[in-house]
Image: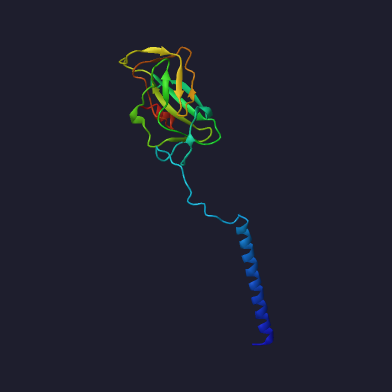
Amino acid sequence: MSARTTGTARASRTRLLAATAVLAALGLTACQNGEGVRDEGPSSESTLSDGPVRGAGGPGTAAPCSGGHTRTTATPVSRPTDHLLLTVTNTGATNCTLTGYPKARFGEADSSAPPARETRPRSAVTLSPGASAYAGVLLSAADGTGGHGRTVKTLTVAFHDGHTAHPALPGEGVHVDDKVTVTYWLSNREAALTY
């Protein structure tokens, strides 16, 4: 091997060792100032007790919908007869989730209307900002078999966080009896009116 080749190899080794030393020093500096890589442990994911969330907002988890960031309306419908459509719209800036059924109390009733169990969805409904969920209300028995029929002019819908909404009813009020029933919250308007 010539002297020239030996000198070139020695110079390359010296540069490699110098570069390695610089990298090692930089690594120690980063760890000593507290900004190095740390193990934060496993990530955590919150889940809902009602199972995976699907619906208007897509899959994922979200905080429960609150009366503070939603708008609730009550709309009389011509079909089916003796029905009302409740609509909750997310007016907030983030997704929220509706579970269960609306706690709807008509007039001075002592309790809210019971749910139609057959309308229970497989999962909760997540609403993205601006999206809506629906619940149908059977106000009274079409065949007149419901007892204690009366006309009411107020409606209160309670949310899980304690907020309540008071959607306007028609000026003449609505007729309800002991058969008043609500569906669970659903992402589809038509489904809410087909029970």
